[in-house]
Image (cartoon, rainbow, N blue to C red; front, side):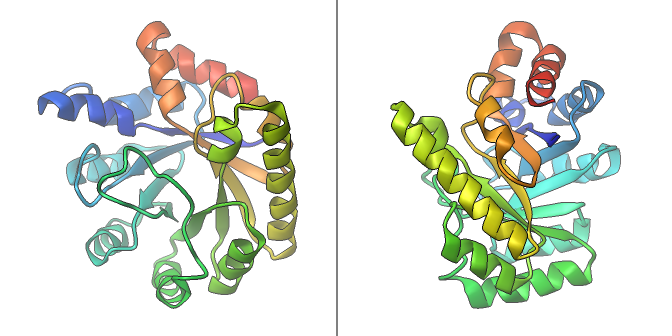
Length: 237
């Protein structure tokens, strides 16, 4: 049974819309853990559009489960991560104009840089995950780099309008997960997952963590955060 990683970025997005002090992503993380989350995920973007450095420092001190820091491989963010030492970093591609992460990290293209990055994080006893599209060449490159995890980008599955396309994406996720396991990589997944489509991804081989944000926070506006998290935990149990 995979654990649920709750991404609290959207709590900070709402706060930053008014540049005020509420709602607080730290408080949201506490509620999520109380409701059964096994991990808290935040993305410290270079433009600081939602999560701020202070949030990250407090979360490092208060999260009782596992703090997963999504981040680009920029020098500034790398130095912050090495100083803070979260439990895990997930390296993602990042473009300033995007609303959300639009695709997986190209490990093949950025192999040399990522190889050095993994070495730095492992020397600091920080687990390393690569957020990748479910492609064999990206899995192989991730293994060659020495990553601990791959997190498969499930956006193509989640956004597919036709059942045939959904099934094709699920097959691709299954096949690449099997390859990841063969290569001694641990398997996570996330992006675009909701209360309505999450069930089908639970059969992905070796799945350890599901990282979900937007759907949980959106439902929380209606029913409350604790209930929204508890519902998602029940769906993946």
